[in-house]
Length: 169
View 1 (cartoon, rainbow, N blue to C red):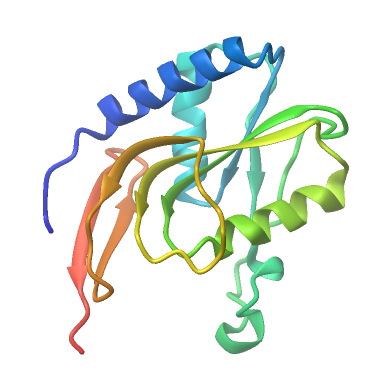
View 2: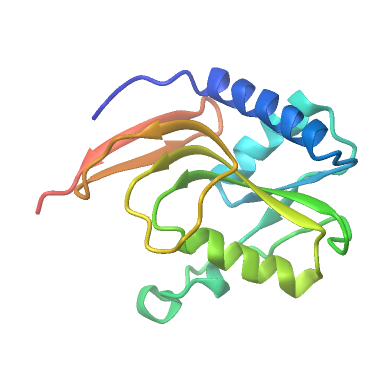
């Protein structure tokens, strides 16, 4: 389970894959949206590597989660910030770890509350098994082989590091 990952090298590979994707699909002026918090950290690094003009958007999906009534509200929830118009824009949604797909579904629901994008691509630092919804990333930094009891978490922002834990039961 525990393996050292060169996070900056993974992000550089993601930037290359995104550039190739933009070229192949003839996408001009895409905008990055990071999901708080790890997705924002990654989106900022990708933004710098890609040299994009639009600032990085930030989503806080707390109100859009399907388990909101079960987990409750964190007292310091900050609002989302999308400093650009999403209508007819090609967006790249960025997250740290793709697991069940529920976080991405919640993020897309929120994005559509802002408008109707031309497209949404998904870029994640790590993807692991255990999907509960039919959501797959277009760009993945690394695939993790974890059991249901093993968990990965991105810590940061400086330095970015993957931490692995194992549930006790």
